[in-house]
Image 1: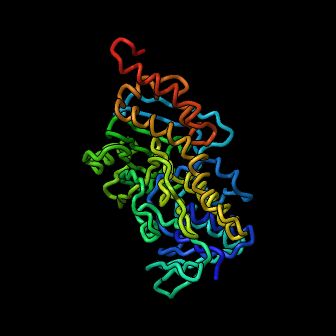
Image 2: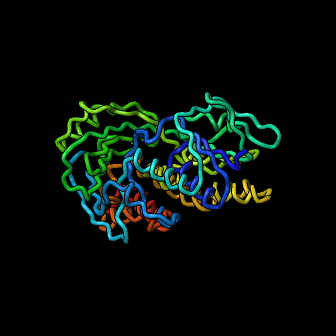
Image 3: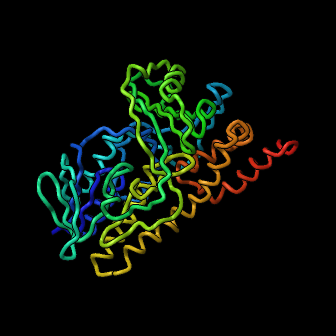
Length: 377
């Protein structure tokens, strides 16, 4: 009988496993894929996550980015160097996720990868997790199996607020030029953006639609954009995947179980940043489960409240900003992105040096004013 079983070995599951094991709790992580496993993702990580750990992430970081370059329809560039204490990390998810799990294992957590969960049952005050390799029991359960995982539904979370966004990604191997620059393109795609994040051995080039469901030819747009970097993404495998954007606070706990990571719908609705919020939810889930194992009957409810207060309160502002930014992207690029200091503010948000609550109200007012004829400037 484990103190906690964690389903999913992504950033949320790995973080939760590390912190629970470090607290002396018995932990089992179940992952359906064999680690390390490929995961389509831009791989931009806020260096703020380092504050939650007592080890060095350097072995899991491919490159560090200290400059943001934005374009509109592949032209009209704005390039800004980030004046932040630590640059943005660029990672390969197979390396990063596995590294995090390895840190958890060093603390005593057990991993069973290449093991798919086939169902769950709550009996005798514990969870039985059924797998193809037989059942396992745990007093508590963390569902961290991503946007498409079945755990949330099995746990009874049927009426969740799920704003699903779509993304298409390719990771071509290439000779990287200017590996310190992250690229964002805002004019080619509606209700989203295209990105190119450098890695040591190539690029992560992706496109995402974060609001609405208007059909767009992602493959053609991605291929056209990649020509800026002398890359032919048509020769690379392309991966489509869903993102679970934050869309309001919701209950994240049930009988002896919590949702974490994308299963908890914590992805930033403006930038689609997912790794940091997933790790934050894993951290808070571990704290709650640890308290629950120790006898605190209100610990899991406290987890739901912590995510709402410490993450959701800021995502309210991110959602408001996304609502107006993606509705008027041309104006937003002109009076927002091109405005002196705007790209630096974006970098501070991505680095965790600033919160939406500190910058969004002024940005929204500026954008709204620009929508009124004769009031823009």
